[in-house]
Image (tube, rainbow, N blue to C red; front, side, top):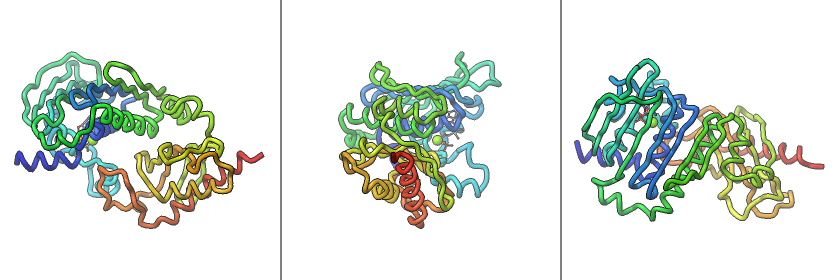
Length: 323
Ligand code: ADP
Ligand code: MG
């Protein structure tokens, strides 16, 4: 059982950034409007995620750390619809299997909160804790009991940068949530949580980037495309400033990237690659669910509607910019 736990944990938890992604997604699922992520030493020594969400009731705390014990899937239909979104009830179990985890949480119904410690998958403490409504999870010494995994980690600065990117992606896909990121004691990021994508982009990528954008809002063939693309004069030498989200989840999609680039061809561009923050909203049945939920690369059952929607959405946005 122990070995199986550790192997299963490896599927969800590869690096500090995967831990952070799972923990912050939980905060958002919990209805948080403010989330703080703090890491030390690239997240390997220390990851702390705090939210002001619904909290976890005392009697549900140990259950939350059991594999496949999700509170989010009620019916088989649900399972179908959200399997691509990673609600699989595995994150907390996986993290707890390979680290020292401390949870402090309180729901609004409870006068007293709970402190719970679980080390390498074994519960070590459950006691009262005075705390505000919401949840704090502290993850220390990731992979302390799986040295083989530890060896795959990169230098602290690379791991920290990967965490920063993961935080940015979640922030960009949830402008309604204020996301704060603290690296080694220094606050690096704070999005306003005002629900506006543009001010979130401003907070993440800076003023200059935010000023060089054109709004996109277009629906074609059941695919809604919204967000921002760069003005041709602000295009880039590579794809690093392209962010795509499908139904609120960061993905890499060649189809959408190529559609964007094709649409911008003909405009006089500085670099070959337009930048973008684009949300695609569509029926999940169009997305190939065979792709592992923890991976970000997606394939489409049928690429055509995706390509066409992104292409025409971008053409339309560029047209609006023409003199
Ligand atoms: P999943 O998110 O797939 O349900 P997780 O292992 O990530 O599985 O979390 C297990 C359960 O713990 C969740 O279903 C939820 O009930 C609870 N939980 C985890 N994190 C939080 C949080 N920040 N706030 C409230 N509840 C949480
Ligand atoms: Mg989760």
